[in-house]
Length: 338
Image (cartoon, rainbow, N blue to C red; front, side):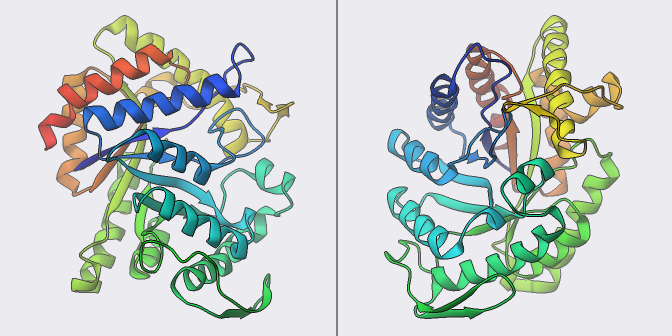
């Protein structure tokens, strides 16, 4: 099982600015590269103070400039927000600038507030995503591509420059629904998923759907990977665990607001709303625990056959604690799975 760090900029309040927040996550990427993480992932979100990264490909290029070996995943680029004729050229350029270290994770968008403020009705995101994905694949792998569809109509064109990686970077789908995981895997895509606050049975169903598709594909599916994303941080004292859980509760009171809630924001800052999930349920769904306990809990994922675990530490924890946590994870947790 490989390990990845999710770089998810979070601005809890106005005590810092975008420069500081982005510099912090860039330092996290440098640390991840230095201590041996296989990859880092870059989110795309707009208009809000969590997962705050409106320019994922630009950031991927910046990361490549200051690191040596980590792969850089977009996790994920939201296709319905882009014109594929422009985006395909940006992807090809990023593939060149990162010297082939880019893996393109894509999705349809999860936050209604974000999508609709940018002119994409939530009920259209799936159909827009499907058409965008087909166009993107053709533009990256073929020349003189023309299109007549529901959302796009254009004469034959060729994006320039051509990607460094033949056919473009490897592509990964962000999917939570087990049936969706099955169908995306059958189409030949890597998969990223998370049960979020779901129970363990949901995770088992997600893994089962992926494995079922791979088994049916035979040798054609052997290269496909399944990645799991979870929020967590090594915490080797009860006091630190409680402190981090407090921060996680505050973070999720905002996350829930835009993910499943009403989407109440004030000048880009998401309001904290009461949560229905209990603290004990939250603690069970996150990996905020000692290094030894984290090894045991990750062992379950390893035994399920997960290919990559994506650790997200940016839920309000101080930068020095995040950097220490990444070092500790590499030395005391990840080493057990090499």
